[in-house]
Length: 331
Ligand SMILES: [Zn+2]
Image 1 (cartoon, helix red, strand yellow):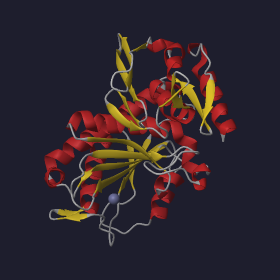
Image 2 (cartoon, helix red, strand yellow; image 1 turned 90 degrees about the vertical axis):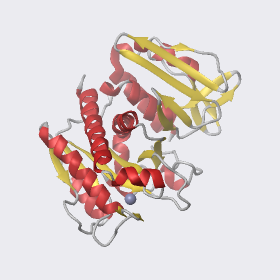
Image 3 (cartoon, helix red, strand yellow; image 1 turned 135 degrees about the vertical axis):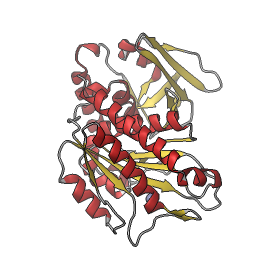
């Protein structure tokens, strides 16, 4: 597994070409490879990052370039890292060891690097087709509240995204066009018979008690990292079909999730890793699972039932897809 990770670093550096002027020095901590945060400015020279001293356990890197500002906030002991205001749940928390702040190599290679250098994502193919996957359907209603079923809200959202994408020339495939029952295997099969595609699964959330609110996006855990919030298991070491697109997965999640959060001003629950979700595991294209808010939260439930709100959400998802395509196809 470590060999696998370091090979990827090498690949990304080669892809990075002339801009990658420094090499990463890795250290071991709890059987994981880590890299000192202090190496970030010298590696990503094109950003000219400056680093602030830790305040309240936060280490901030700021880049002020003519084409835009980039801020990364790492928090000691926490997996929650903010990049340009978007919340990411890292596979491993930031640790302090021997006078250095360390980030895991998995998070560096599979998260920070594809976000800072999306045009270097090695496996990025062209995006011609967008596969939209409205969650649930037919005899599976998903979550339910006083206003309706998750399966119906998800379909409505997907139809809105589809219309916007088709207007600018994308080819769109939906895993279901109406209220039909669909197995997870069917969704994967539909996705995997398309070419040059990305896959966006659309859901709404629910929790008992109704307290939680906000938007979260899941991407497949890279091999060697767990599902968000739980400890590592042996099965987390397995390489799934979806792992071939690890770096594009996170770039796609960032583009869509970031756009939705900034457009809707919704609570940001973060971009999270998941190693058990069937569609994330099995689809060979860049894939995310998007949760557009909690139907169990009174305020958010009201928004989700509003056509205007779903339209704004659809527009942000559409914009995110365009951002992803532009960023990854620019070389
Ligand atoms: Zn769902």
